[in-house]
Image (tube, rainbow, N blue to C red; front, side, top):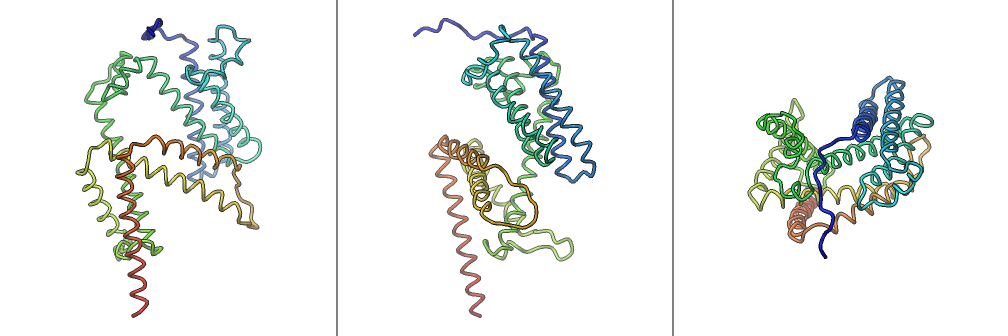
Length: 318
């Protein structure tokens, strides 16, 4: 079947669409910033509430711009029925839980701002994807080795390539550093809980830095870069993280059975259920080679766990 309608690069940015990007993105960013401020323990809860209210207002203003952009505004209900073809539908489906959780943070419990921040981050993600698809055809984005740089160049913004590469390098290095810190501390904690060999729980006498866990995880990371290609390694990390997220959501359902006397936050049951379903769905999209690579790494972890158990039993017999 011959395609009648061809993709056309959009050169003209309507003020209503630009208003939706600007107001929606700024409002979502404010809600995310409010959640981060609350997470680090800011004492001024009133400022957090003000940021959330202001973020809601800006998001609402962005939605009003979208409503003005619809050809027949009074038939706006139809915007919910085309998730596969319309960016408006995807944004409209995300906004109700975002607005509801942010309103709950203001009216009932400020801790709901964390849930609102999650939806706000999703809104920013959709806005970035939307802007990218408008700036360049999807086929060109898929074939590009640097899609974000291609989008920036297509918009005509005069950012030198070397500066953009430097920013990307710093961002990747920062992400790698955070990952290495997380992995080394996680390895140390598991060794402390006797889940891994006790050798990995060694720390410096004064600074208490888990130097052995840092050394081992760094050497393992360096070795993995020499095995296979970078894409397979990245997909394997995603696969293992999906198992982490899956176990976290399952743990939430299990921990709900425990009854405690003190007041605490209790998430709705459908939230971890949706988390489990999304993880299972994404697990089905992984390539067989990624499953093989991930399975080998998990097997190494299981072997180390049994080595730790054997070491404990041997020590107990002495």
